[in-house]
Image (cartoon, rainbow, N blue to C red; front, top):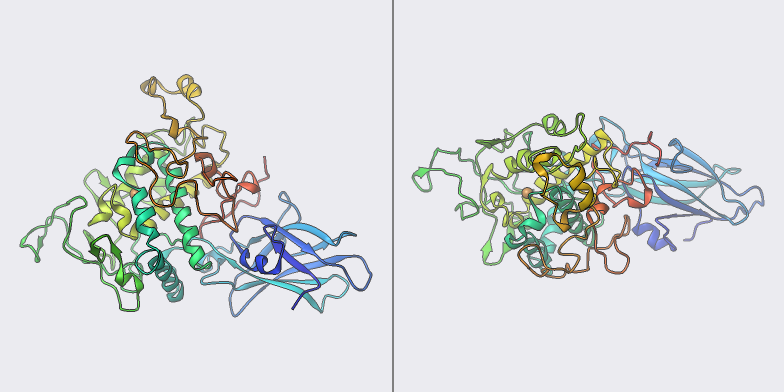
Length: 484
Ligand SMILES: [Cu+2]
């Protein structure tokens, strides 16, 4: 079937590609509309959004990046029979996932000639595909995610182990952690995995674990695994001795899965299953952390470095970069098992849901304080070495950021260099091979090597072309802001 009016997101040049690319978030993305009115009357098209099968999902349109969003748009295709506008998911506060699609494509753009509105002459179905709160995901969405993840590990080509676990190794420690590049590096790392999941099933996105709230539906046999509870210091009936925090080593207990959950066959090297035991009751409590790294709430996290500052995001132990300790570290140390070990933690797929929440908190912080212009020190402090030496407070003088923490530095391992300072080669197939996207920015056009800078305006708030192709269900695009 071919339509009189064709709808083509992300510069798709065929109907098939248009369908592959019809996954959007809250950020306006380009939509090309093509057609010629057979009535010979002015070539004007009316676009509107229609929710499918009982969904509440809606789209909205913008004539230009700076214009106000509208529910229906009239577009003049002119003599060329072609015009471009913008389309975005409509953020509907209070609805499930704030109006994002729960499972798959559930909203349609309908197009008709403005002089003949009764007859729909073209349509395209969309998914508002954002990262959702794991606690509120539908059963089907949970199944699709765990299945796609298993495809990347035990059932499929094993890229989860050869590439993603191997990337987060001890030898690369300084390239990934303990400085301001911790957040941007992990944003890229999550996105590379998410794009791999989407090659398996395009309706999948990374869920996030709100670790400062109870999430019983996440710690479930049909999702990330039911997890035994042994309070720190309590006698563990399995060993007869008090439970201690033991980093990374075997904790002797496995997360439990239903037989339908394909994570039930999770394998890392010679380990079958996922070793994990919680110091808290996952059926009703949030992750506590402990000692000096007790959990902090979302509000406390957003307050880090947000108020009055010249470097909202400076090196630990200051600014928002402090969130690497609390709440990020607090969530990791609320368990025994690989999840509490800095280098081994991605062996447990819970890692990606934990880190997705860390990234969401950063996104929310960026949104709240308007910190997304990559060239501002408030967004990212290490703009270049020289500048740091002049503006840095006295306690940091002489502590230049390493090359790989400066804003335009290409990131290991995608850049194909050896990690600093431990000289590890990029593992697996990641070298010059960040997963390409149909629905977001690609990086260096030849080699797909991202820099820190690429991670900073992830939602294209400042420049539409910066949009990376993901969003969070509770972090709206700021429609009020104009591009600057
Ligand atoms: Cu972590």
